[in-house]
Amino acid sequence: QTVVTQEPSLTVSPGGTVTLTCASNTGAVTSGFYPNWFQQKPGQAPRALIYSTTNKHSWTPARLSGSLLGGKAALTLSDVQPEDEADYYCLLYFGGTGVFGGGTKLTVL
Amino acid sequence: EVQLLESGGGLVQPGGSLRLSCAASGFTFSSCAMSWVRQAPGKGLEWVSAINGGVGSTFYADSVKGRFTISRDNSKNTLYLQMNSLRADDTAVYYCAKAAQGSVYHTLGPESWGQGTLVTVSS
Image 1 (cartoon, each protein chain N blue to C red):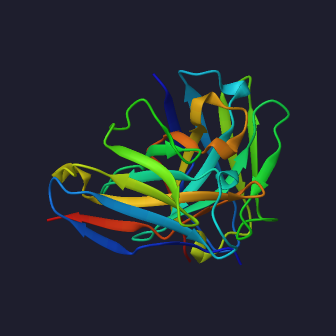
Image 2 (cartoon, helix red, strand yellow):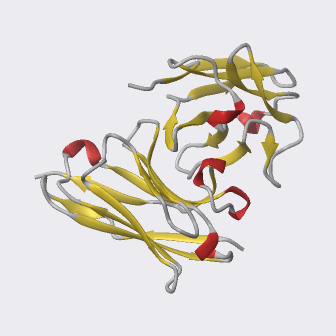
């Protein structure tokens, strides 16, 4: 069974920088897994942030960036704002089948 | 403006069937890959199924394979999810989403999402 793992929770101070990661139990994550990142706030539909590892959508803030880091997909938020407090999910594709990570609850404190 | 409007959710008994629809507008639907993603109450996101644009290759999560069928009617700009043999653990909000950049391939990932429709499987 394919499992995608994210940090369950992270806390960051306003103005700080935080990196969320996304790992696969099958081995290193590469661009061939087409890593995607999404943000979800309570009661709202998810919002896409990053696709194909590093690509931003037109609405994605410039202070957010996607990358590969140490065999994982990563989402880095710089100059964190209070409105960044949310759940973040990564999505990887395995031979065409998608698998979401369990999500990271980001607290801005 | 991209709009995705899901419908068809509701209460169904275990073993029953339901068909979800997603009416799309604001983009070239026929060539765009589409996906279904669900979220059980208080839980995380779960990828369910996708259909590519063009030829329309389909893909399913193991948890729904053999029970759910994704399809599209390009003449109606509508995406469907036929759900059979429903179980209690299928209870969730079901979202439809279009592929990033209007790609024909679903692996670019979901870009724009609908507001979801709730499916409750209970006796």
